[in-house]
Image (cartoon, rainbow, N blue to C red; front, side, top):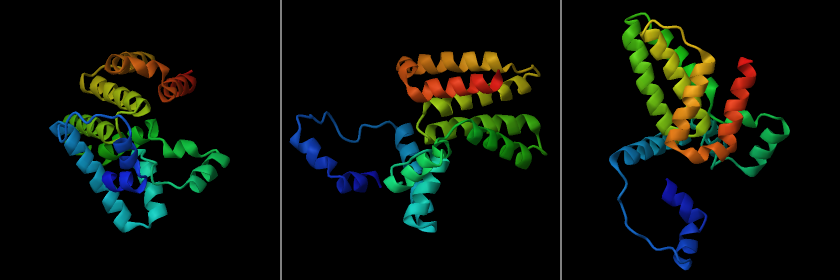
Length: 191
């Protein structure tokens, strides 16, 4: 639970001692509340199944939340050049599309693609709308939409459209390292 995390870090004492004025409580919209509840349920269920360190690692790999991973484990990932495994990105989106296509694809291909698009939007919300997940999800959705409309998908156009949509959503992402690396990496792979 996030409130327990705050208590453990004594952040509430810092907030109380600072000049922060609380403008309101419980004024979060339904969508944000639902997504937060789902994130907490995922974390709690994984923690029940695995030990503390293993569950933190699993949560980091699945939804990109690395708060519970110890500094030692993070250092080990950095030393072995595997920190990218803790970042949710295009490979996750590819796995989702492949999983939905292989499990639901035998029935109705059109409905499978629509269900996949809806789940990609949901997954993007669960992971916190990070730039790399936004880019990968938008590109995946564009590929699925092109297939639904019987059109050929163009990776460079999809990359441009996704960057435009992301920057409309939040223009400050243009200075975000995750945004820049995600697009640079994808351009490097495509070229």
